Length: 396
Ligand SMILES: Cc1cc2nc3c(=O)[nH]c(=O)nc-3n(C[C@H](O)[C@H](O)[C@H](O)COP(=O)(O)OP(=O)(O)OC[C@H]3O[C@@H](n4cnc5c(N)ncnc54)[C@H](O)[C@@H]3O)c2cc1C
Image (tube, rainbow, N blue to C red; front, side, top):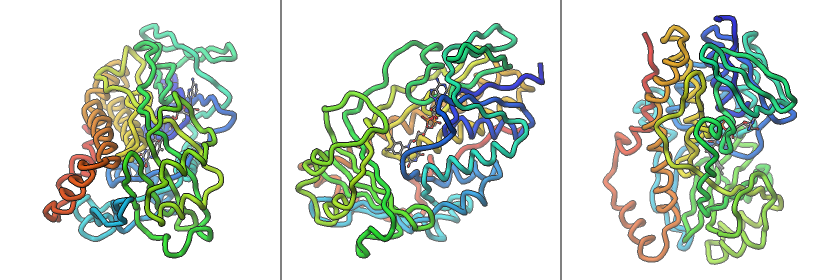
C-alpha cells in the first residue's frame, strides 16, 4: 500500500506545491495536468511573508529570491485626485522583524510556477503527466482510481483535487454548482521596463482606487518587467479565462481618472481578461481518500492577493497532516481541512470586503479616504498579523 502514489489532479501552483511537499516527506506522487505542458499564464503574484515561510519549508527560498522583487511600500492612491490615501512599509526592517524575518514580495506567475516545476522535476518521487485530464474517480476505501479523458485508469492511495475554480473533483464530491460571478473584470498585462514612463516606474505595489475600478502596478522579475492589473465592474461577461479584452471598454471605465492612470493604460496593446469569480466558503473539503486544495477548495477574489499563497499553505499542511497521521489519508484529510477552512474562509470573505473598499464611490469613497488617512500609526502591523504571521504547520 505504501508504494502507491498520491494522485494530484491539476498541475498549477497548488498542485505542484502539494506534490513537492508530499515528495519531500518521501511519498510518491503523480500529477495529472490537462494542458499540453506544465505552464502558467497570467502576470504578477504578490507574496505575503506567510508564504515565504512555506518556501523555506519546501527548500525554495533561494530559487524564489532569484526571481522575486521586494517592494518598499504598498500604497493606495485616490484615482480621481491623485492623493495618497495610505501606505504600508512592507520592505523595511520593522516589517521583516515583525514577520519572522520575511518581507513582502512580488513575482511573475510563470517564474513561481517554474520554480515549483523544477523542484518537482528534480524529485524522483514525483511523476508529472501533461495532456492528462482527470474526469472522475472511484474511492473504494483502500485505494482510489482516477479515470482520465483518454480512457486510462490510474490507481493511487489517495487523490487531491487541485484542479482550480472549475474543479471536476469538487463537482463529483459536492455537486456541480457554478462559481459566483462577481461582476468584476480584471485586465492584466506585463510591460518591459523600457516601455514604462520613468516617472511612473517605482519599486512599490501601487493601487489607484477609483469608483468601481482600480489599477495596480508593481515591478516583476528583478525590475525587468512591470505588472499592470486593471479591474472594473461590468455585467457584460458571464465567465471566461485568458481571453483578450476590449480596450475601448477599459478606456471608458477609467476615463475620469488621473493622467498617471490613463498614461499607463495607454501603454498596453495586449491585455488579457479574467472574469473574477469566487465561491462561498465550505467546511468540508474531503470525503474518504479524496480532498480538495487551492482554488478547487476555496476560490477567492484577488483583492487580498492571497489565492496562490493559500494554495501553497494548503500543500504544506496537507503533507504534514498525512505524515503525522501515519499516512492514514482519511484521517489526514479531515485534519487538513479542519486546519485550513477558517483561515481560507477569512481570506475569501475579507477579499470581497477589500473589493468594496477599493471601488468605493461618492461619500463612501470620501469616508474611506478619511478613515484610512486618520488611522493611528500601527508599528506592529496588528491589522495584518492574522494573515502575515502565517500558520503553525502541524508537527509531532
Ligand atoms: C487577476 C488575478 C490576480 C491574482 N493575484 C494573486 C496574487 O497577487 N497573489 C496570490 O496569492 N494569488 C493571486 N491570484 C489567485 C491565484 O491566481 C489562484 O488562487 C491560484 O492560481 C490558485 O492555484 P490552484 O493551483 O489552486 O489553481 P489553478 O491555478 O487554477 O490551477 C489548476 C490547474 O489544474 C489544471 N486542471 C483543471 N482541470 C483539470 C482536470 N480536470 N484534469 C487535470 N488538470 C486540470 C489547470 O489546467 C491548471 O493548471 C490572482 C488571481 C487573479 C484572477
